[in-house]
Image (cartoon, rainbow, N blue to C red; front, side, top):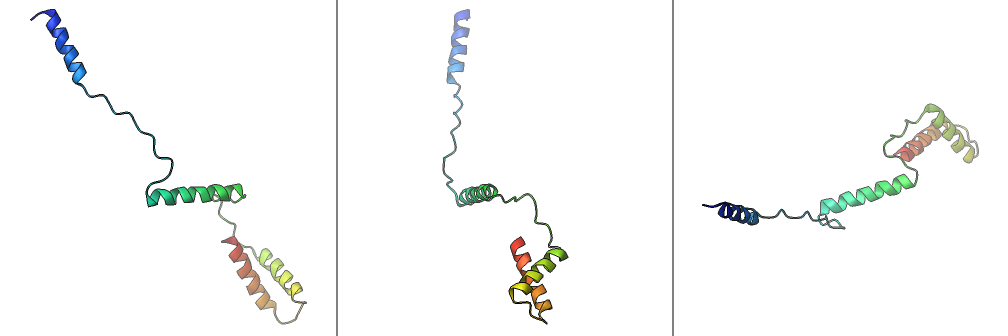
Length: 101
């Protein structure tokens, strides 16, 4: 066997190797329901962040001072009636907790 036949065999072996497939880019739109839901969630988070809402920071608990202030405002808006202080307090609590959610 001569030097040229070894070179020919090496060339044949290297030519027989398959070429690796080129990676494809992912589709521009989601194709599965899970991907669609994830895209919708990401879009909603971006919209919320643009509106000034922060998902990373949880809402601070409602304080007694905030409830008292809102109960006072409710009392004033009702014409300052007597005997409804507990109802006004409860209404203020419900409003403030609803807003925090």
